[in-house]
Image (cartoon, rainbow, N blue to C red):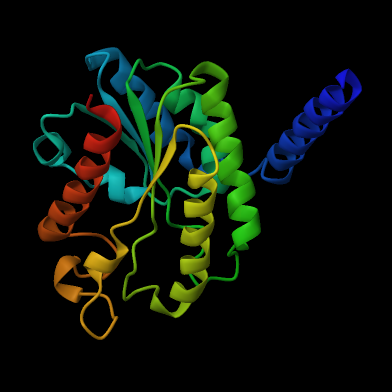
Length: 228
């Protein structure tokens, strides 16, 4: 039994190392922005029951998050263009400085229809590494994974993104204290196409009404898990 456990630990360690080695050059473009977020830790203060949000530009652009998420107290640590390929390098720097009652993650740039797209399997491997890093310091804190939103700008890859969302859902359902939030249907019209009125001009990022929907779904799931 001890040999089996040792083998599993070694395999996990080697797997993690190979992920970091493979994407060793993916952190540089975001270093300045991450450093700026770290600077906020020196000038902002939050209660220990705050909820930390990390991920890509939909988090960074959510300037009304304090009002939208009330009475929950959010800590906003999103950076533009985030991928799981770079987030694995920054998870500890974005998460470890904080005390919080829950963590919410939203990253939507690994499958976009571009030549550098990752497979669903690879994105999940990276997501699992982010979770593993969080669990090193916060073994029991609830983690909420927010589904990738359907958008007109990336509609051609929506079937693949749906596979990714399904994988997120399965992972959350089979791991303790990890929860899946999926507002996707609320962003689709009667014909099953993205509702353009919920997005800004680029048809990728949410507008005020789009964020209102996001907030309602997120708070509903928070209420289920975090309220007595």
